[in-house]
Amino acid sequence: MLKTKIVVASVAIAFGIASSGAHADERKLTSIGATVGSLGNPYLTLLVQGAEDKAKQINPNVKLTAVSADYDLNKQFTQIDNFISAHVDMIFLNSVDPKAIEPAVRKARAAGIVVMAVDVASAGANATVQTNNVQAGELACDYIVKKLGGKGAMIIENGPQVSSIVDRVKGCKSVLAKAPGIKVLSDDQDGKASREGGMNVMQGYLTRYPKLDAVFAINDPQAIGSDLAAKQLHRSGIVITSVDGSPEVEAALKSDSLIQASASQDPYLMAQKAISIGYDIMNGKAPAREMTLMPSTLVTRENVGSYKGWTAPR
Figure 1 (cartoon, helix red, strand yellow):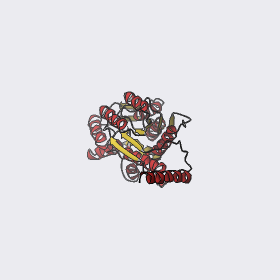
Figure 2 (cartoon, rainbow, N blue to C red; figure 1 turned 135 degrees about the vertical axis):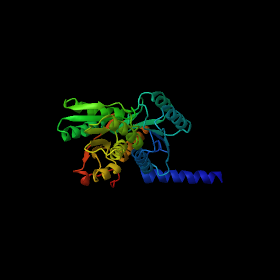
Figure 3 (cartoon, one colour; figure 1 turned 135 degrees about the horizontal axis):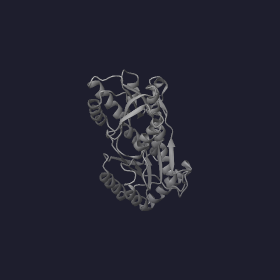
Figure 4 (tube, rainbow, N blue to C red; figure 1 turned 90 degrees about the vertical axis):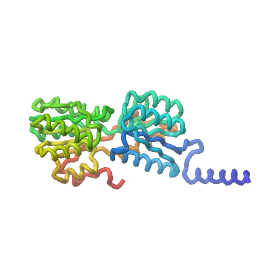
């Protein structure tokens, strides 16, 4: 009985190699551990979906386990430890702290696990795939400068200090440095990268500042929350821009919301590229660059009709 099983297995393996063209020594992708800032964020949910879809193209039987770190560094450390104990082949990492996460990343790599940083950089990762976030911040804030004619009072509605958000704010400030007529009233309030957080922070701003011309929110959920707060407090004439290009903002741009532009990201394609690069690294093919930056484009009321968003056919 044992001999029969061995023969059958050998035939199956031989057939698999013949049909797929794979090399006998190619390392298979059987399991992935994904830890992201928050699975309550639609952007990060789509990021995980893109990773899973690409992984299943490589191996239909791959197992991807996704967990939410809830922007808690200690929680993410524990999650990575669990992935190491489970002997996953790859860790798909959306880090909550790009520098402090390094010991966990090093530990995973020492265990022979490929670590792919996605959407935000992570010290020690094999490679990173993210949006050109500096460019995204530049696009969103250049729109504000032009819309206000170079004069007015605005807010930079900040968020969790991960690399992507830091870079967006950096890009925004580089544009504002050339627009001395724009006064930044605040740039250090954390909207928690969420709709609720954006709403809470915006309520405080609107109570504090009787004159506010524009807001740059670091992502779409915060922008949507900010728009809701303005409506509740009956404030109008405020230009809101953000980063993501999400389906929710597509709808907002087609309505009477205060949101007027969003610098796009493509989380699905970003995740697919990360898995592809990670799989190549598993099999000894290093990428040309450790950092892959994906370009951003500005989605506005004027061009939203032709925008191919997150849910566009691939």
